[in-house]
Length: 164
Image 1: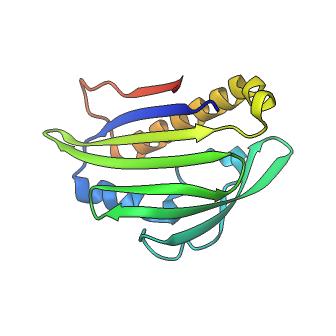
Image 2: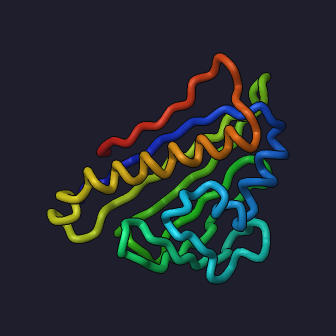
């Protein structure tokens, strides 16, 4: 079994409370997801994040491939972090931790995603395509968050995907 980890850091010049208000509202996911992915919440996004919340999405990860994705918000510590886990969807495992940390210039958002591709060896063959797509998604997200909230000068953002 091969697991992959995506690790992302982005600094924003806003208070942690403002970052939390944005990130803990499921409706804002569409804002930070590339339009070509056809992201749409089907159910469960009416409230801010809470443990046990089930959210169902429709997404087009690759042209011509539409899928439903069901996640559960498993852990929440208001203003600090939340965790979403895939219950049904394109991955054999998807465990996504979102952390916020105050810095003198604003806030650092940290994402750690542990994922496993389906279909064993066949899944590993398509890993380069999945990795490329995830990098594009997170680059888009970084760009949109910078457009919305600005950029912390002198702080580098970070995105890395590796096998663990």
